[in-house]
Image 1 (tube, rainbow, N blue to C red):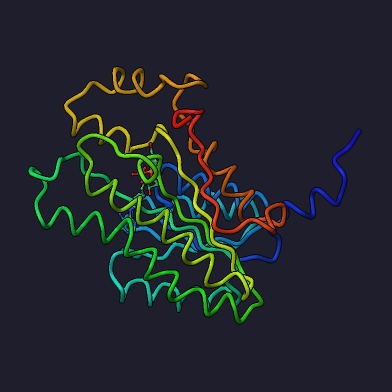
Image 2 (image 1 turned 90 degrees about the vertical axis):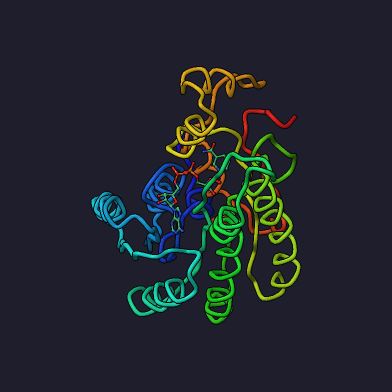
Length: 262
Ligand SMILES: NC(=O)c1ccc[n+]([C@@H]2O[C@H](COP(=O)([O-])OP(=O)(O)OC[C@H]3O[C@@H](n4cnc5c(N)ncnc54)[C@H](O)[C@@H]3O)[C@@H](O)[C@H]2O)c1
């Protein structure tokens, strides 16, 4: 028994260039590596100039082209410069994974206007900024695939996270709207909504809630598949949505949460 070539061809991302945002940590770094393992060249966008280049080296070790771009995805000029850099350095542009995100665990009375603006700019406006720049280049290449990382809290609400819930709800419906507009041009747009995944973001959340991380993880494991997710659990879903296995999938909201929302 062997895996047949037609399946490998459907999974393969060879010859494709993928932009992944928020790659210096957690889910973004796992996505960058998984897409590289499937053959894609990777443009890494992150605000963290220290950790960002480390993953670039890991991907080069796999034999793929990789380049880190210091980019604050909430700043238009950074997005423009980084996307122009990718076009110059890689040529084609086939995949965009809008993953960079932040969370502030506050209710609406506690939350300042600056905190609201920051979360909305990083989590939601960035999806507009990058998609606005990237879609015309994808269309020029004959199409592409965009995956937005939402959250279970983009589908249902959660406590003390108003800006985060609003931003992720926006990401979910923005995904559907973009899918409707760009399907005929060959651009598929989907959203992956993870449940609790053990990353630095989750550890920061526990700290913001003044909760011990062990206790936080134990509570977060209370779901039909009783554990928190790993970044690879999410990366595998992103791979499916970027490769040809999902060629008729667009506008979908793919929940990856061990059954938590169920
Ligand atoms: N971890 C979870 O439990 C969980 C659950 C649901 C959804 N998500 C979503 O998954 C995505 C990734 O989260 P994670 O858990 O890997 O977080 P993380 O904090 O581990 O990583 C986020 C990355 O984004 C980068 N980043 C932050 N602000 C940025 C900006 N302005 N410009 C560019 N890069 C920026 C950070 O430097 C970091 O490398 C986020 O959108 C998050 O909302 C995470």
